[in-house]
Length: 222
Image 1 (cartoon, rainbow, N blue to C red):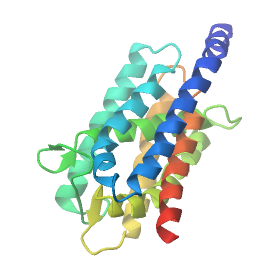
Image 2: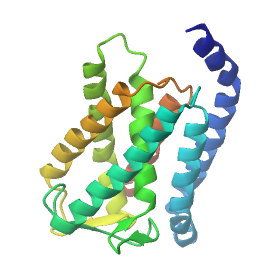
Image 3: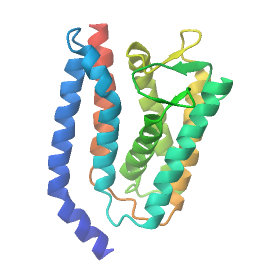
Image 4: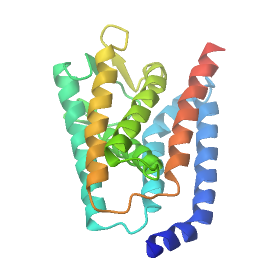
């Protein structure tokens, strides 16, 4: 315990700087995506921004053991697989397809970067709630609920920016139910695997995601 606490303390100042850099990137992104003159360029940068955010977040995880990397690979792979099934069948999240914004598609259906997005959200939310003084099963539920509530904010922005689109123009309730269940399963994996769950940047990264999608929604309404 002393070793982990020491590492967390050492990382506190660098994490603040990293959080500041990410905040600036996302603030610039909000402006760029909402100005007609710059939107085409910033849409092309969305996949790169996801990769950068995920990389920075993971780099602040202390004691990154083999279990940690196994977890990361499993989440990326399962995220891509469940999205591929979802697009192919329309029976998991509802009938939807991906647009061009998120970049190259796996098997012509799912953006490769969506695997990084699942890892980003699962790890950030899981790590953010890991310090709560409650049993792991409730931590899984809280983290899955946070991810689902974030998806509520993501959906209108994602459709507007051509991340993906829904066949009938509306987000089905099935999508949110599936998000909660799948997120809960991934969180169960996160909390069951024996690696250090603490990450000083996790809560900040998740908060930035919330602010980014909320701000984009508000700007459209205005």
